[in-house]
Length: 263
Image (cartoon, rainbow, N blue to C red; front, side, top):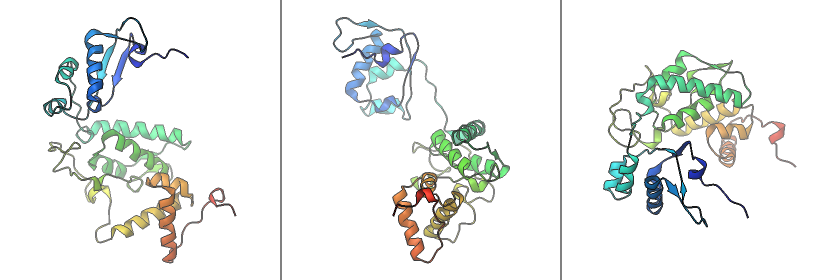
């Protein structure tokens, strides 16, 4: 019905980014190799090749030489791509980037949520610079989004920083984000428990989880949907837990009128 321009042709005269190229199917790798080598493509249903002039950037969170050795990535494609190779260190080994990115995400999500831009106090910075950041920039972005939503009096404190990833394994002294040995020097904030959480020793996981859920719900003025989004759980899971807490005689913040189920 209509002609659709592919990504390579659309990038003619500019730059094309292929993200996580190590995940590409081997059959597609062969087609990509020809496009890069010959700098031309064939349109589906076309009658002649189309010449290209592009700058190609690719990213991978894996060592492509290792992937080639395991037969999961084409050797010829690897050598064709590997003109200039930039190895980016994990976020925990770039403490100055943590500060710049954290401020950027605070501005971004304060604007997105139509709230005043909060200020990070020294306690918050200590938690951020002491965390392992297994998920690198994506984890930092989500952490700052939560912090903006949990900020009080236009300030992000250590209590506003809810860290994640501790149960995924790995530790600053033993592993990197990709499972390898860590050569970084990331340190936790003085007096902080793992993950920047304090005063948790001797308490059960269930107790800590309950307090976190109820405190978040209180912060959201009883809004179940908002609280579930901050906690990263489904609204059904949140309601089931609140039902259990209620059965145990714990007072639950009432939902806003807009969230009450219709009669």
